[in-house]
Length: 431
Image 1 (cartoon, rainbow, N blue to C red):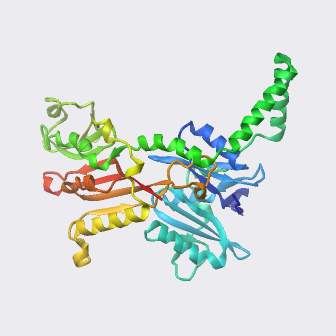
Image 2 (image 1 turned 180 degrees about the vertical axis):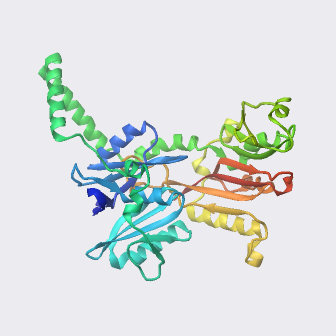
Image 3 (image 1 turned 60 degrees about the vertical axis):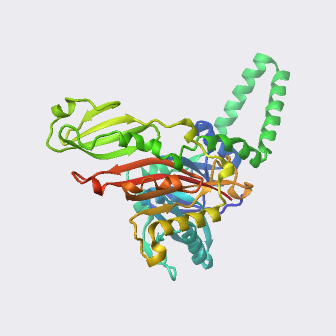
């Protein structure tokens, strides 16, 4: 895949690189091995690994850079700089070329670590705004008509502790001299041990396998890994009651302590109790059934407990045949929210519930493949819902393709009627 890259010099002899290609590892092998394989397939000179909590890491691929280039990925730096925001970095490179970096939820958006002519910047920014469907926050060193761009500089992004280490571009191959030395040593040992003929046969067989692997149809690889990834997709939204069971089994008060917050994930609920007239001793007088652990907090005002979450195995995983096309899905979900909140009547929500969808990307994209190579892909995005506690059952009636990853419930002290819930998960759609 053709790729235009540009280095921008900053302080201390360092450079910031624009124009990387971003790939998602399949997630079937240790990330170290997958990163190495992706670098080989992409003929990369350098790579960078970017990790985000509760998301699979992504690998940035650079090509054609000198091995000793002291360079850092602009997209990695900007992703960490903006953290969970949806934002775009617009950087004037001179000679009527402009770099554009789009990030969302701490990750670069595919196709938006790029360099374009200055005449195309407005169109590219509009594409990013339509893709993310969120308010656009723009930063950079250039002003574009029709967009509010806040002034930024690359030194500020390199400044935070750890940013340089995480964003640094690492050479994808060993130094040439070392490679030759290793090959010579390896050839000598093999030839001496097994004979020159065997070694030549071994080399020919390895080369044949390498060539065969290089010509594997990415769509065959995609269809091979996809069923396993979908089977491990997590709790389907229609079974959210499985995650609710632990919360429902808990008392609101216990020996002078108030159940303030419950955070449930796939296998565990963490409960925070607030002091409400009791002590650590009174709380311990009577155990709460099924508690796995109890931790008195050093502020003397909270107790934290863990409880198991029991989910039926049949409630997990996604059936690809049940998924809706992306446009149909968006229409169905939008209509559902409009009817649910009553906003179609007055233009303003009558029920205080919000549902947000992140932009989807291809699920389990094979190493070295690009999105436009995949035929009939399955895409995955994030979603979140916030509202009153009694709305927590709403996801059970969502269209097929929603999964639940976490459920958070907060109950204000002595005011259970004001309890709120936040649900987060992923959604899956067809092309």
